[in-house]
Picture 1 (cartoon, rainbow, N blue to C red):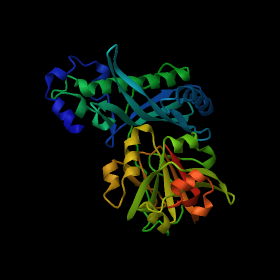
Picture 2 (picture 1 turned 120 degrees about the horizontal axis):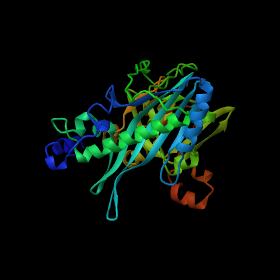
Picture 3 (picture 1 turned 45 degrees about the vertical axis):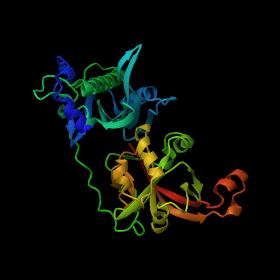
Picture 4 (picture 1 turned 90 degrees about the vertical axis):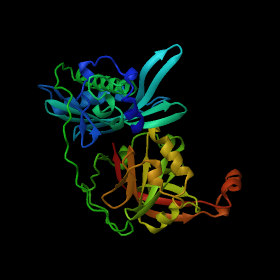
Length: 387
């Protein structure tokens, strides 16, 4: 995609004639290599609780899932005054009788409420776009920044990328304006990029088998908010059966992931648990058996191709991480996950049980899976992070 954009720089016919100041150079802020839009909304005379309640009510109405999209409020904490949302919708570039040009955009909105003000941040912007017969996932960093949006003189927008820049800035401004209106205020500072100091992560443990689980409050993961099991958002049945998840076991020294749609959440031995099932022929099972902790990670539709790849290829045959395009992250306790996930559930093994053909009572299930029964893993949920 980057190569295509560079080629388009040299095609004058694909340039917008003029640039509206709203979309001019510098209007897409980049912080530490990432596109991040921020805005501070003053709310004079309003306390943190009032601001939080108003914005939570707005977010619950604004970010609603439907048959096409999975927008939702991911997290809300009244005491901390924090709200996190997942946005997913269409960006429509052309809508005519014989021409419909649009992309699906995914993004994250973080809201921090304080006395007299609210701070909003939109980040992790990704586009799902049809290019010919291919469907590509494009990061905002490779599409709407100054580097990819302008000609050499920086006085014209490239149409191929400029349309994404224009639509994204319009979406960001509309979202910030809606939040401002929800607080009943009309004045707010301009959209800016505020650098955030990165969270320093502990060095990964040499082996997840012996990694110590950090005490409460010591489980920070950069870019994520930690929640408790009773606050897990979404419909777990849909998240598994339709959206799927990745099971990842191992540590920074060696790990593997696989796509799964079987499993669930529950309560066992007075602990919150997650359970999953792995066929003994899968490469991941060796990592599950050898390590003490593992992760279950969940993704938006944007990463469907990556999940398809991880489910149809074996780690024995190549580098699945590189081929899938996912970005590994190490949890404070040494487990592996991926930064593209909107939710990471970290588990510590409690039960490991191989099924036998006799244990499968359903005739259809026995006929299909009885020759190589799956192995069940039940893990205590020790950490949950959401964006």
